[in-house]
Length: 394
Image (cartoon, rainbow, N blue to C red; front, side):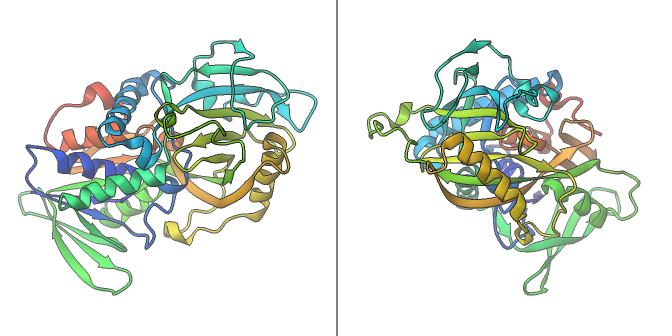
């Protein structure tokens, strides 16, 4: 038995992590990654916000499972210190940044905060680093929301996989899939894009988890298939910031395990978008995003990303209004592409014998990653996971 996972981002690496942990799976595991840079798109450049109960009914069971698995993983592996797993409050800043009026972009679907069960608790506690001018609506007190640094989490998962003899092939692209005369998968041919070397790997299960690039991989390996994977890309620019007010000056080593991060959702009428800010540990940074576009072109390979400077300037102006013009330094400018499925929910489904698609998570890729990886592991081992992913197909 040999499982080949195309895509070494958060979904593919989570699948390899749980499969390599399994006491019943005894086969080989191969991770294929096209980019010379690991985690070069959403897996390394997204927000890292986790929620347990912010999902539509079709995603509710998977969302809760994944949130619980994130918490368990952190508790068992010192997640706070390694990848910054922390409780996180969720708040809405009820103002229109940069304008006197208040068009509520949040409730028009531009922000994931519309999914939250609002408490209506205006004037609640909020982050010290936010230079706000109106009350905060507390949507979550931190019991069902959390925060991670996704890049550090991905590195932990991959290192754990490699320690358990998972094989990483990078940078490669799949070329041809071969079946036995009786029908089941047999092998996959891959091309190393640096050396042009061709390698043939045994393959009895194939997992397509290449994010926004999943449809391209599917067309390459199944050129005569009439199946269309309705997954498109949503580009999002971001800033990683450092503020003198985060983490709180009072924080010392005895408080670290109890540090609460914050998620802030607001509006920017001047910029024309809905900013989202997330404070993170362990490095003490603030992530700012929310400026998204479905028209910004998807590169052929994730590390070939090109950052739009005008988008970055909009984000910087927002940061100045929310953090104070002298209240932050820019650590990193970024852009990533989130895979968005046509029905608004991810595709987690066996599309034919031995071939499973796990992609299309949109803004919830990090939050739903561990649950997806665990479910795909169960599917490879022949177990029924419709309780969690029933209906998340084409």
